[in-house]
Amino acid sequence: MDNVITIELFGQQYSFKAESGVPDANEVADLLMKEVANVEKQMSKNNPEINEVTILTLAALNISSEFIDLKRNYSELTKNISERSASLVKMIDVNL
Image (cartoon, rainbow, N blue to C red; front, side, top):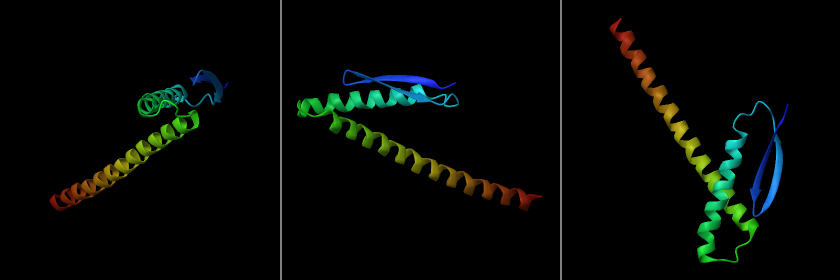
């Protein structure tokens, strides 16, 4: 059974279906709403006339940037773990 998620952005409700095997659909929706609220708060100080498409675009760019940073960090971590594991295996082999 699909899970229906409803979010509110700019005073309008939007509903979408998330597959039942996707346990974090609410978390994804919450992340989007929080990022939109953050951008809206920051941008309204400088430009109270900013439009919704600009806010959504900036929120998407912020989320994408964070994703890329996390992806890069994950890649560096897995590389580091792999190198350290290989080094440990060599030390074990030498001492056996």
